[in-house]
Length: 363
Image: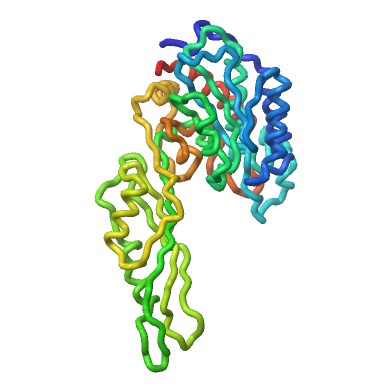
């Protein structure tokens, strides 16, 4: 195996304590999507105190290793520092970092604070190493929870050329080597208005039902080996103005979870061939992604006992134009849940495994 650096230097456990301290501060600073100024400032200050030059665009922060060499391949270590708003089931203060029985409680602790600080610790470990085989870029980005335009997508052109990315999300440090994309469709069925008592007009709601039935039952010809079938669900419907008027228009919304065997544009074209309603995609930008199981980083993870799987949940991978793997400490089931927490041992394990995998790959 070729190492990331010519000599593997020992990891300083003080880094772990520092980043856990940072995570506690991040938890206690509100950072809802589009409102991440406070956590961006915390990250900026933390890195500057380490004498690291910080790049910032809006609420996105990124840094590069000290001995950056543009001739070398570059690996991006990325996670997000925005959170959803806490749900109503919380019994604890979501903006209070509290450690109980080895669990660090607080909003964003698992999604994705644990991964964020584990990747940061990994970056700090390698930051000033000589004779690096690759460059490392650490990016803490905004608006991931809403796939916002001012998140990772806004800095893609600002970063150095990236060859591969690690996307920090809670996966229990297993390797999500494929991820579903998303299309939201706004559909409109058109009819003709009329008086209900005289059965006049052409009922747009009835016309919509035929298309809704198609969305419920249709099976795409190709199925992803890692992600399974494409899933389509009608999630909203609106028709009619009053009880005695035949509706001339029926609007409904379809949530489409796309896979790596079709592009979003191809799926949209297939849908339009089969339905009679007007179909408009809100966006085609949230693409499915996948990476070969033979990729060196994936193989390094497998050799360390990590499993591979296809992820049904969306992340910033959908907005990345380069190969990526989603991997991080914590259990995804805790994301967005009441009394969210992460085990401190999960963070320590995450740092250890990130370093071991990065030390084992050859791009």
